[in-house]
Amino acid sequence: MEQNWRLLILSDKVVEFVYSPTLRQRFSHIDLVISCGDLPYYYLEYVVSVLNVPLFFVRGNHAKLVEYTSGGERRAPWGAVDLHRRIVCHEGILLAGVEGSLRYNRGPFQYSQGEMWGHVLSLVPKLLLNRLRYGRYLDIFVSHAPPWGIHDRPDLPHQGIKAFRWFLKTFRPAYHFHGHVHVYRPDAITETRFHQTLVVNTYGYREMEISAQALITRPCAPAETQRAPAE
Image (cartoon, rainbow, N blue to C red):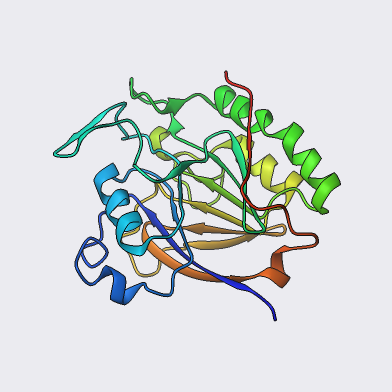
């Protein structure tokens, strides 16, 4: 029987009905949660604790080094897995991520285009190994900022990342989920096909269902995490 994964992807905005007692009832079918950044840790911890499913995240440009809550200090959301510069195999799905946006002030998770190239290139050795082992490089790429020329804007804080465009063209993940660019108009473009990748702006929240058949040539081993070298 073909397996489907039901994803809840969050970014940039605390959604009232997600952060509410109705969360479990509304999203009881969800298998996996992904955060594309700029969300408070307490919000992500609430989702993890209520849905009791894995949550993978990258930080956005507004993230703090330390978040202070009634539960104490947090440098990351409890119970979630940081994807930045990592490749993770979760139940047959290969995920990788890059945090932050272009640098426009002194925020801790802001980078130059050159530094973004460094983040992306750090993933390449493991992606090549994935190709040899599983017949594909990657299934889902998660970032905060969008790729250059796709869903981005001309102002510096919201310009896309040039390295991401090369990354998608070269390694062909099935999906690229990002946030950062807020969506206020119903006619805003939030899904774009770029080569073999569906690029999705997940501002607020998105639900998606993906099939194993659409992703997998050869399933990866569960609970396998690969960490790119530190900067």
